[in-house]
Amino acid sequence: MKRTYSKEFKIKACELVLKDGIKHAVVAEKLGINKIMLYQWIDQYETYGENAFVGKGHLRPEDAELRKLRKENERLKMENEILKKAAAYFAKNRDGE
Image (cartoon, rainbow, N blue to C red; front, top):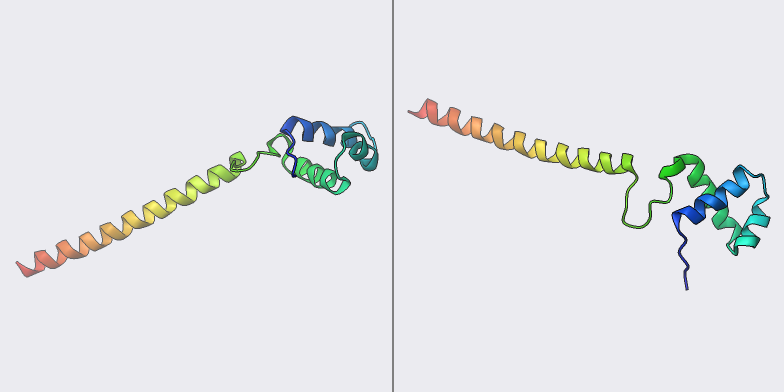
């Protein structure tokens, strides 16, 4: 059965290694976690800081902003296409009068 760990637990484990200087193997053994998993947590923590470990189904703030901008860009492209078609239609009808 797969266990889940809170963000606070992961941060504390990372800080034991990074700030307190305790060896990875010792921290992993004391906390009852896999040493490889601890290395992965530390990598995420060093990369993202307090924004690490957002959990399943959640996005980091910068990823959420990127998703929002991409969605808005797609909407604007569609609106632009509609306006181009409408302009061509009205130009055609004006010339046909």
